[in-house]
Image (cartoon, rainbow, N blue to C red; front, side, top):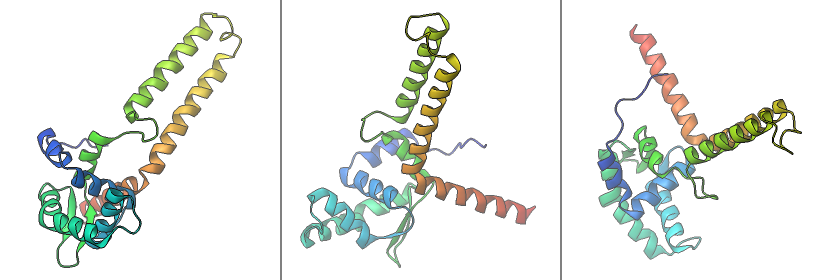
Length: 187
């Protein structure tokens, strides 16, 4: 696995995240996955802002205008999206993941994935140590069973995270495969 050295600087990520409409647009692009038209994106963002489906035409137009004039060019300039002005299509690029790392939250619980995994690790280790040290009630359970349960919890959390990030993961796999093919052709 190769470590990336071209991460977006924190200042640029904060600039992106400073605007609520830009955050919402990136969130919608990430949830849809693949190529999206500007009209589709503006309808998704406007729907989220108003809570109406379909959103009012005036709101969609306002969102469309701000996306085209301000937000999409900024996101394209920073390499977060690929924006084709001719076809009016948008697709997230590799730097979108850099921004997502700053907003990575398990939605229903309000904690980050790293906090969730850290808590699972600490709780699992504490319970396992308690069982090995003979703490009443906990020591009645086989340590192998406790370890298996902890590993199952980690696997379930990982599977859930992969599922909700499936479009990003698939895109990265495709990009990695394309890069490998290009390298083979050169060499």
